[in-house]
Length: 153
Image 1 (cartoon, helix red, strand yellow):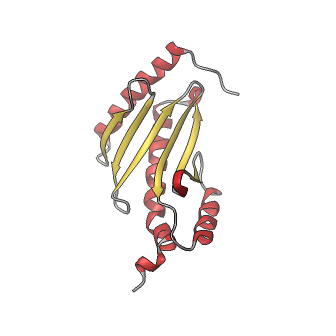
Image 2 (cartoon, one colour):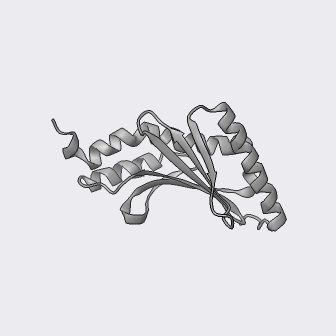
């Protein structure tokens, strides 16, 4: 089990995340916005412009032990749900540090979690990059499975 970070340690990590994200935004033209959650939340929203999916928003949530991260991939499939879920499970086998999951209203999310003791700037960059790149790689294919009739010619 990972260590619990007290309020001062968590505040230090919060400042580091703010700084790291500011640096990332300066060097990555795909990042169009970085926002914070409510005052009492330890949460960030990183909005990125994509090619295959117009925008990907990554949520980072700082807990006492871990940094949780997630992005919304697509709504629940209208058709071919079994095929889509099988595809996602097979993709999970190849992913490192993230996994596809079913969330609210059966929407598809990409999620992961990292112990705070392992968090540093390169790791945060890897997390954001992995979420973004994975969505870019799979989005159109998943849509064609889950909404096949909309793509029929």
